[in-house]
Length: 275
Image 1: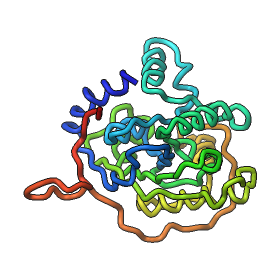
Image 2: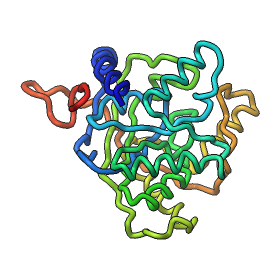
Image 3: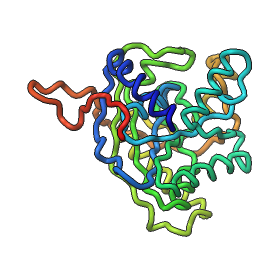
Image 4: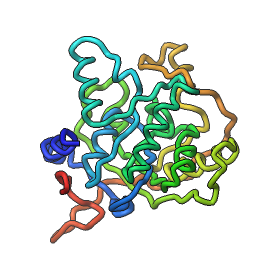
């Protein structure tokens, strides 16, 4: 998309100069072919920082509300989301989200990158929440590898309710591709879908260093809203889940130190579009 490339060319240098974002594991993104980027979700700007740091174009799912806003702000948001190719998803679940799934499959069939947030909504508190199985269905139906992506520092930079991220340590860690071809043909088996999703979330937990909570973030938001402790939008398709799993103690990644003579490949600068 011409607008996408133009946005990277103009917005990339601005983001680099303002936030100094860093990236590790960029080589885990294949140069060609389809792949699903499964990311944790801490801030609205996750969908801006990650695409700006990658050479290839990646399109994310976005809540349908972005396309139905009113007034000047609503129009600007809607047109921006359309221009960068965001695929609207109805978070009421069931058949309402099938169109978004099909759009994702179509993009993968064309050999492109497709981004998805398995948690289904932004984390209310910076912790990692239970993943929804749509990402597993997408992987099995498309045959594409799943690449875990851990966004670092975006919750601290832009907690829910804050429109512009603060100037703080923002980065991302790209994990190794996960191959689920051994489960081919089992996309209707809910136990297989849950196992795949949990494996993806476990990898995100290790990459991000976040504490894992075995509940849907949507349910946590709803519970907080009932007590008057959360004023943001509350999705309605979350369901509570049994749990008890505890995140192990892992080192939270920090921005790599600058080499004295030249930059290493894991701390690549923000780049413009590639031909």
